[in-house]
Length: 269
Image 1 (tube, rainbow, N blue to C red):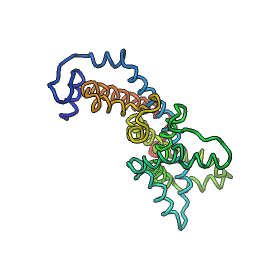
Image 2 (image 1 turned 60 degrees about the vertical axis):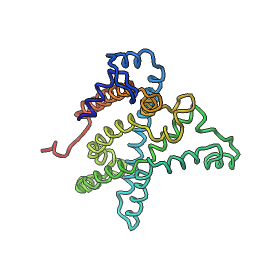
Image 3 (image 1 turned 135 degrees about the vertical axis):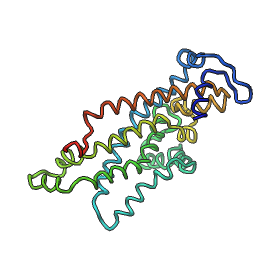
Image 4 (image 1 turned 90 degrees about the vertical axis):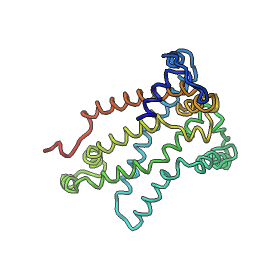
């Protein structure tokens, strides 16, 4: 509780970590909203990341969960293999490997050159750099996949059996039974996905450093720079509180909308 409340106090001060904090009122917030161009750039980059990454991760993890729901001799190995990126995805080693894969002499450029296509400066191009980092986030879909997998296993078999008797094919059963019954899992993963995406930091810090031309300057990375590079701890605290308010509002919006699309089995009672 103390760090939480103290950070709120610091957001109204000019504090450089080594000196005493100086109360300046709402000046940090005024500067943030009216004078700091990089603040808005970082916020827009992070929102763009969330808008693209969250649905892609949801769709990909759901499709993989549907495939892994079928029980075979190799199912356990497949599930462990697909979950592995979630355990390793945030590590420094994987980030550096990812940087090498998409580098000028990386695997993907070698594939392009081998088929006669021009290579791309993936991490140096403002049009592609963010998507390289975004794909790393999508690759870490294991946790969401396991939640979807548990939800699929919890769907009563009698529903599918009744649908088969009525002549429903696999596609129709997926959209009429599986998907509606998985809406609580989708809701849970959506909320966590939004929170995680808005707090993204590692990939930008380890791979791009916000370059090129701030196209990968995540909000969390800019907040880190303000706090520990420029020693503007008060300003960084103000950024943290703004982000918290944004996340709370976005989460509240999702919760508010859930009444219209989330279905719980207990609703039948």
